Amino acid sequence: MATLVTGGAGFIGGHVAAELLARGDTVVVIDNFNDYYDPAIKRLNAARLREYTSFSLIEGDIRDAPLVERVFAEQGVTRVAHLAALAGVRASVDQPRLYLEVNLSGTLNLLEAAKRASIEQFVLASTSSVYGRTEILPFVETDTADRPLAAYPASKRAAELLAHSYHNLAGMPVTALRFFNVYGPAGRPDMMPWRLFEAAQTGEPIKLFNGGDIHRDWTYIADTVAGVLAALDKPLGYEIINLGCGAPISLTDFVEIIEEYSGKAINTVSVPTPLSDPPITYCNNDKARQLLGFAPRVSIREGLWRTWEWYRDYRGL
Image 1 (cartoon, rainbow, N blue to C red):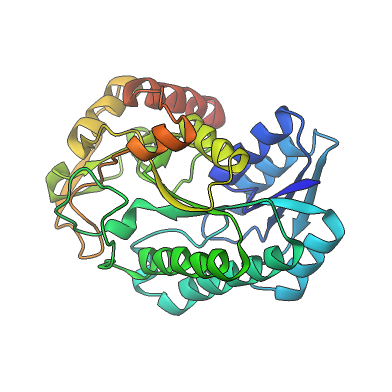
Image 2 (cartoon, rainbow, N blue to C red):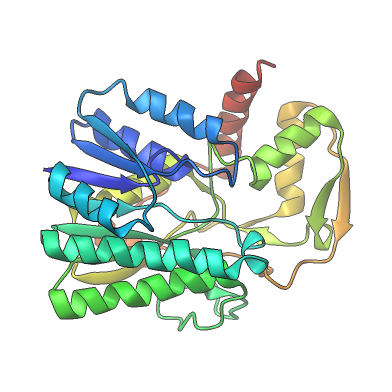
């Protein structure tokens, strides 16, 4: 019996795999170490996971259907945390075909293999980006979420719908988790915390949408991981569940916290908000609390301090 973590060498996947291994689970990771960001960071994540004897790494692509089938058959997969994806809202604007291939066709391969394996639970990573520019605040799962702003959220919403068809036809238990702006140690270098840490050191200008007057619901990685594990442990039929902190702050305030921690001013430049980006993300996590016992514990100030400490050590500052 094993839990398959797709994208398990990445940011969220690496943390999920580590937590599963730490509690004694058998974990199989499949990851293709793509170059969306520096693969060396993913190699470091995988190296830490190799310290556990109950860990196996399959280097491959979820678009490779025969490979996915072999992984299920040979590794005894009974649960899936599907965290592999081509991420990045703005990057998807110019590469819609690739995003659909990875995020939808790849998910299809996993669902097909999971159906044949009669798995116990399938957790699908989705995104708060599916809500687009909704006027329903905070974001709630009953929103239709049918107006995505770019290919990335469109691919994720399509994956949610596809997964429902497997629940309907094969009785597969699926929980789709809509993540909200996950950050923390070993985070992705393309995301705002890392970029601001870098800008504080280099003095290079960094673009702030709408002068920093946009709001994001930053959710610390440990809280997100706790929600993923709770979802893996509790099949619910088919559910879509928000997983976020529920306390959005402005980008301006976010920058000021990082300036305080780094002790350096950040050179910012105001630019218009792209059409691909909503003005706010804001999580209603009542459903997660009720169904998963989810209770985010790490405030934005505490989470950014932990992340800054990790970054400082990583860069040898």
